[in-house]
Length: 220
Image (cartoon, rainbow, N blue to C red; front, side, top):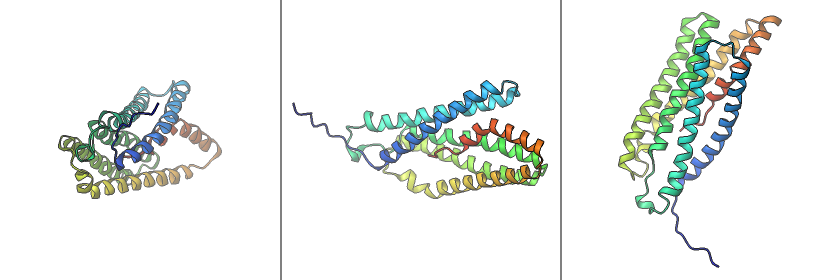
């Protein structure tokens, strides 16, 4: 018996989205395991810190769900629509663009605060905070524009072409913020070099790994 010939039209964004979601789900699994280990081993931590970890985990889970639903939308719901009428975006995909900067704000904001506590230098913390604020503001603005773009589909990548420069700038500034935070923390921790202090810093640093890991998410 010959299988029915069902025409399915797709386009370039689906393949890259599937690859991104594949790695995203791998990272999500590692983050959930780290989160479970944190709540099991660090029950004595301050409730605000536990709330922060809970918010980050919640955002990452919702982020992965929306990204997965985007694939379902493109490959199942609109699979039989001709390419000339096929939308290039969806509300699921636009939600990913909003959730990612919110997660970034929590993670990088926390590390900016740690830099201030370690160094006591308001200028260093202010610089990293400024870079983080710019990255988050750009992400939220692009998320807003992505939502505005959905009803106009099929727009044939007009949003991507119109705001490509701002997206590139935001990602570059975000990478610079990550690098600045990492180098600053390494510098100030190295100044505390003594067996007892380093042992304490390493132990506490392992407890914070979940937040550092979440910072390296796949961006929309």
